[in-house]
Amino acid sequence: MTEATLEPLDDHIVIEMLDESELPSGLIVPANEAAQCRSGLVAAVGPDVTAVELGDKVLFPRDAGFEVRMARSARRVRVLKREDLIARIHD
Image: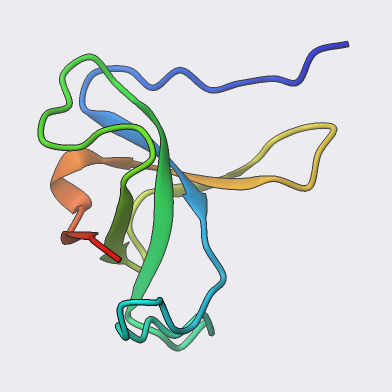
């Protein structure tokens, strides 16, 4: 049986969550629940998304979008709109 995937529509983005606390670039992104921002990798983009590509590491508000747990795996992803992204992280 194949694993389910999400195909975002319009200007939505699927983000694979990162739990790291300090990136190689020296940027510190707390992974605890009190943190205001979170980081993740862009796993899929909708057809109307610009300026973001698959594999980009991004920063977004902790409460942005919706958390989705994929069935048959422990994978957590977050689906949010492109406008919710704060920055792209280069490290």
